[in-house]
Image (tube, rainbow, N blue to C red; front, side, top):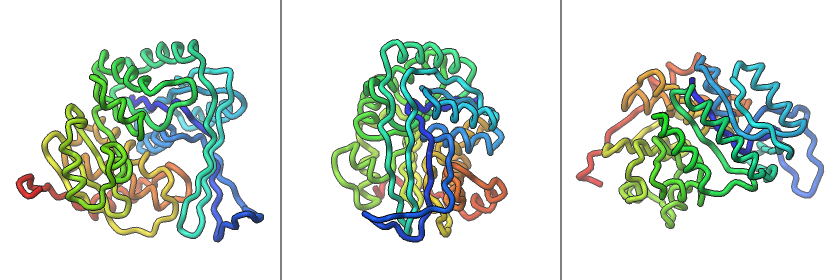
Length: 314
């Protein structure tokens, strides 16, 4: 089983418009509503890959009930902790090749609720092979909380795939308990080391910094340009097939799902890289957030190119 953690889940509302009128009226014929948050997107893709999947985090109110019903219908095991506050809404507006997001901050988690979650999490971790932790934390949860989750996973010898950013990622990487894999994009990597990265050479140089010591995999996604991947001391350049993007929302989460599923299936090095990045690519071809067409996997794997970067030329 793969356990996905979404501490700050949401009901994701997706509006698709030909044009977005600022300070005007925008009418939408169809609004897609799904159980969302980055970790739940991971869970959705894992289920489409027919992986045994569980989800955990905090849920409350009628929107929390909506999410529980959605994941149960999809065969995702429910390890969520009930809270007094209300789960949030998050809105994504897709328009003119752009994506505008309106994200509620979410509920305030009490001390008791945070402790209750740790107990529930420890129970779920013991039943899992891999753990994914994604996204932001709700109010009341400090930046050290992810380090606690990784420490608990390490206690039971379970690798953690982490997808977050900013101070939360930095604090986690500075702790003694390291995630097995992280997935910053180019901008997030620059924020992490304190300087904008504008070239492949700068990205490769950044990956040599001490903050990444002890992290088995660092996957730097570059949008349509592919990715730069570091596995231990090996570096790879990944080129993905050019596609007509329908909806990019959830592509990073799909990459995490692909790596988690690939690890669970025993994939190594280049095969694992291809499988992980392929999920992100084929997600962009679907209108629904965090969704893939499994019939396109083999095509995408065949079109993908992974090239090892010789270190003396860095």
